[in-house]
Length: 138
Image 1 (tube, helix red, strand yellow):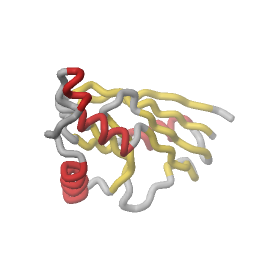
Image 2 (cartoon, helix red, strand yellow):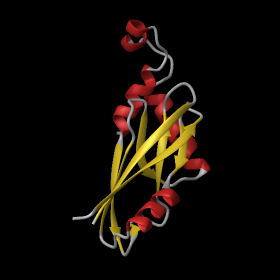
Image 3 (cartoon, helix red, strand yellow):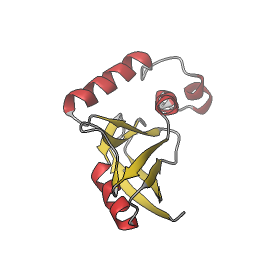
Image 4 (tube, helix red, strand yellow):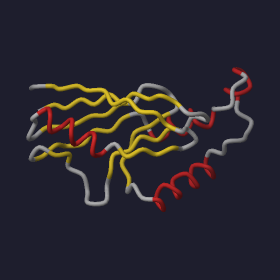
């Protein structure tokens, strides 16, 4: 089974920044020449996540608002106390959403729904340089 791996490098604004990766992933799949298989994405680090969603202003707002209610930025977090840090909320949010996604590839394209995009969400409390590892198998 052939495997093709590529890294996407990008800068984020942090604080729940959501970046659409779909077109870049589609290009990597096309370059790999895989017609039927899978594409997997993984973000190294403990304060960012990969997921799929409808990438539009309202959906992004609602995702951020929901996570703010569930896991507020301010709070009595042991991680922050022990490490004199300010980003425990980012670690928790990233752990819940998860660092990876796998999407089927059919006819040379990721098999996504019509309103579904692949996104990186950076929950850290500051801008970051991120790498997303993309692996295409077929």
